[in-house]
Amino acid sequence: MHLSLAPLAYFWPRATTLAFYDAVADWPVDIVHVGETVCSKRRELRTADWLGVAERLAASGKTVVLSSLALIEAESEVGALRRLVADGRFLVEANDLSAVQVCREAGRPFVGGPTLNVYNHETLRLLEQDGLVRWAPGVEVGATQLDQLREAYAGEGWVFPPLEVQTWGRQGLAYSARCFTARALDIAKDDCGFRCIEFPDGLPLATREGEAFLRINGIQVQGDAPIDLGDAWDDLQALDVAVLRIVPQSPESTRAAVDRWRAAIDARQAPPPTGEPAGFWQGAPGRGPGPIG
Image 1 (tube, helix red, strand yellow):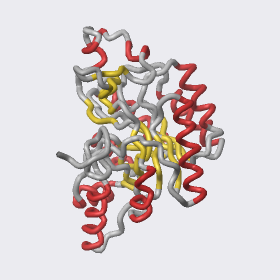
Image 2 (cartoon, helix red, strand yellow):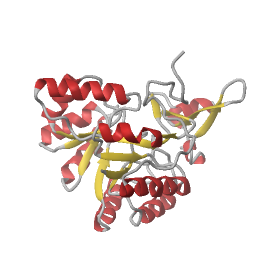
Image 3 (tube, helix red, strand yellow):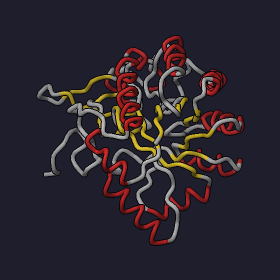
Image 4 (cartoon, one colour):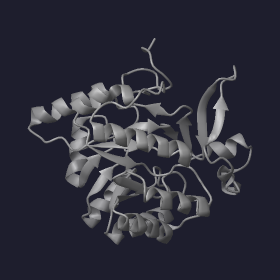
């Protein structure tokens, strides 16, 4: 079982981002995903910069994956994607079917990212035929669905692909062509001024009663509370999950989560409970435990 760090979803200043990945080079993670997955207007780091980050992480012994945008809308975004795929030194995480197509045309294997919307074994099998070598299920695909998919694969005589499951961090719930941050600040998306850089951990959104509910992050909406699958350790073992995925937040909380899950992997036992919700893993509401009412 390996430990991975998902791509950074937030828009941080260039120096902050580079310092973060310089620190990650010494963290006890096996796989690091890098790249912009939320908004192509975030240009503190360009394609060449992300490749430079990838090179430095690879030199430190990490396996690096270049993550693509979750929502590709423009030809310029396809062009940037083609440059990532053409580099050829690193796996690409395809988070949009356009990325799957570019990888397939180039004959490159890829990681199936959590925004590909895979819910049945036929779709997953087609993606494997296109080059998928590992799958990171969407946050709404829980233990029961994964077990059913594995059974369907076995029934067809197929070998189920390696799984990379998010075990800690805020869940990305929705993406839109519109910008939620710009909307919240009452400004136009095309003239946003890159205001999401002012919210390095997302813009909190509360209910009318003042209860913390969501985080707004550009075109992405996240759950407010980080989920934790520490209580699902037995499920992760039973499903033969190959990679446990940590989704970055602040450097301090992310490092603490990495250390906690690394200790669990090394000891081959569940990490200490945190009281954080398990999200959709057990068919419960995404914001916390308990049956769906």
